[in-house]
Image 1 (cartoon, one colour):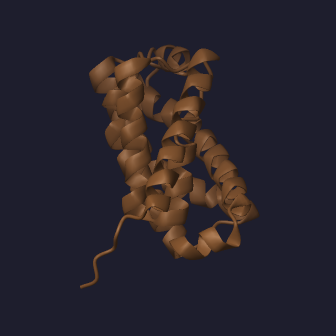
Image 2: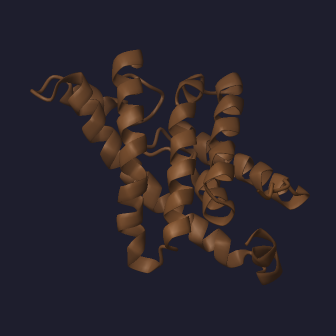
Length: 185
């Protein structure tokens, strides 16, 4: 069995992804957006390097953000790990182009939404630092209840977030030099 070495290029790409996640998360947090923008780097690394490397950026950026500016990020680290893994698997099967982004985002969104909505409902009672908290609280008073409203709101916001992440990651992948892409293949 051949073991794969972690190269300096891969470490730098993961560090770059952590920075992208951190900046995106801060923009969403500061503007109280109902989307998160903290997974762009994760999707980028998962698309280029695969599922196992895809798990690292969101885990590390979640730890960094959780210890510095947004405590909620720590609790959602499992969501980022799953997101990176599933995204890497999706990109190993097929490279989503143009309109394929939408079904790819659906496949990537569903597993992580199940975990994140459970964390939001059971751990935080539907209240987090996201701008979507208001929607959860409004829907929680309907027959959906807390868990149902968390899932519905999380799914909608996660799906929009993942479509944006895949689109931005596609731009970043296109910007990579051909020689760099060959090194990662």
